[in-house]
Length: 222
Ligand SMILES: Cc1cc2nc3c(=O)[nH]c(=O)nc-3n(C[C@H](O)[C@H](O)[C@H](O)COP(=O)(O)O)c2cc1C
Image 1 (cartoon, rainbow, N blue to C red):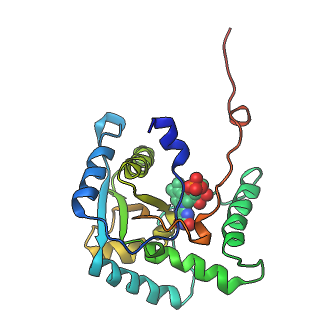
Image 2: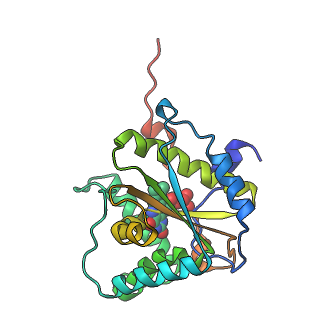
């Protein structure tokens, strides 16, 4: 597989087979991803690999808080506070593709909330990866972590594994860090579901579009 093929074939997967992923494979893909560049070679990433009983425990703990409702407080603002085009429409279409695939209609708020809640079980993937940076880091560490996240997702392809990056976990960052024993000032950047894709699941049937290069690029030459 060429790097371009890998970039084109990676997609977010939200339903997985129950098949477990062995630790050697997870270590291999994290070792490959650790070749990601970072400013000053700081390598500011930390990864929690949550599987088996530990995952069930964390799933249950988040589910209990999720069930209470209330507005969770994300650790950092992932999305713009004020929405403008083209981002507003892209976000809307992204949600519509997901809900259409699951046959969740516009007014079905309970169905939409249930799908959001599935995030916190990492869509029942056997592996949840959580990505953190130490608290004293600046925005540069977020950039480095973004590169690391994509590196993990591409390296996963080599092992026949699929992924879904999940900012959703930032909503329960404080609970997660306390539960797993990370310092409170670490920043939970994202989670990621990892496992073998259930390619027959309706939620895995669609591809998201991309804007053409001409829409986001300006060439400056002679
Ligand atoms: C940092 C990051 C966080 C994301 N968080 C979530 C999430 O919490 N839940 C979810 O279902 N998808 C999440 N996604 C997946 C995006 O919706 C998806 O990448 C986008 O729609 C493009 O589709 P593709 O990944 O299939 O190419 C996230 C993606 C990124 C890069």
